Length: 159
Image 1: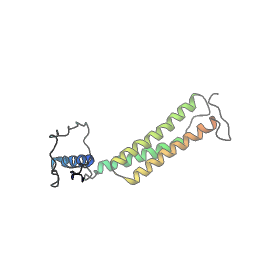
Image 2: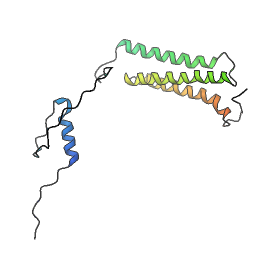
Image 3: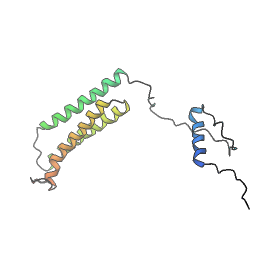
């Protein structure tokens, strides 16, 4: 005995995609080919109150934004270069902790610049920021690796 023709089962993922497309900025409508009855009316998406407005992709960064970004890069480069001329002995004890804290600030500065350059979509500045972070890692490794026994040269944390 032949089976009666059944209506194909609706794909739940297609239904979800249709719902999301219809909710885009409130301008969409369900597609014309959707002949299934809707289960229930969906509530509009709740709006999120943000303290800082989001930058739209079409908004170009202002001159002030670009100048501030390059000022941060200059700060990071100067800090990364000046740390190599650390004027105090930092062989062991508390001075090495202070030096490593300053090196940590080089890495934090690089990360700060990387986040800002990512938001402003500045490729060159983002690469420079990652170079600053890498330079901080190199400076930290120069002091930490001999103290943990990884390098050929041995050093101690305590004096």
